[in-house]
Length: 341
Image 1 (cartoon, rainbow, N blue to C red):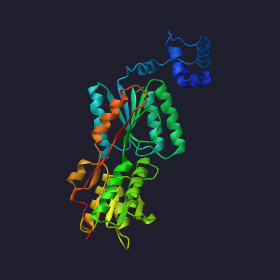
Image 2: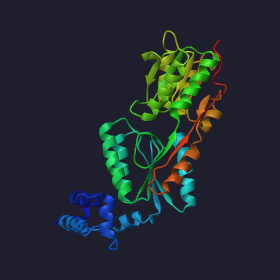
Image 3: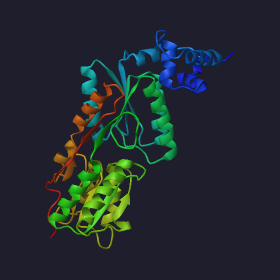
Image 4: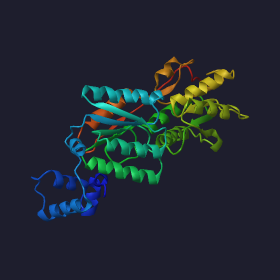
């Protein structure tokens, strides 16, 4: 016997040649004033496929679900811990429960978790990690998110790269451009960059801003001036080792994330290299650990808790019209960066 529970609303919509929203209204609202022929087509498709309405889906569509899905890359990274705290604070205020999952920057894991959260009929999805530069993955994610939104769910991304749902856009390009400009104004002309995986759009944006800031002063990064490592403390350690082991090491190390810059500081300290006397170090994000570091870390400060709060506030709004909120990061110069000798 066929398992009718596996037939989804989007299957009925595709079979009938209508949108998911139209199929939902035709099947769940007898008073909906749509065309009679269209209603008959949807009902016929539902009967042929053996579709059975899911009460949890109706709960989602009527906003009576009390859970929210939060997708982050790695909660062990303070960047995502702070952002998640902002999401949770607003959700608690609204009486909502947050289900958080970590993708560890794996596109396949991200898609799987999104599907599982949707199956749990969460009221909203907050995607807090960087989008991936992966055409097949992007298409699969778009299909899932569009169907979810059309069934009544709310989607919010804390990154550019997705055209479904609301957007909280951090100015990664502008923030890094301003930081690069500040380092040149200190007198630096020799740079080494510790970057994360290029498949992450956030990494690409920060690199783009850095290149723009340096180009303004006639400085162009060579291929071996940039090392690509894991976006973690360990990545910062290995990146610093690679760049500082060159015959002519750079006078300024710029990491695309604070967690990597903190790893770089640790490697430099362990190897007897003075900061900022021998090399300056910068990060991006504004983690509390940046202030506690020795020396204190120069970085681009982003109000991460406010970003999370804004994302959750947007998740409570209807999907249409789409809202975009831009958040700027401000360069903060501290003791880890100084004029070169």
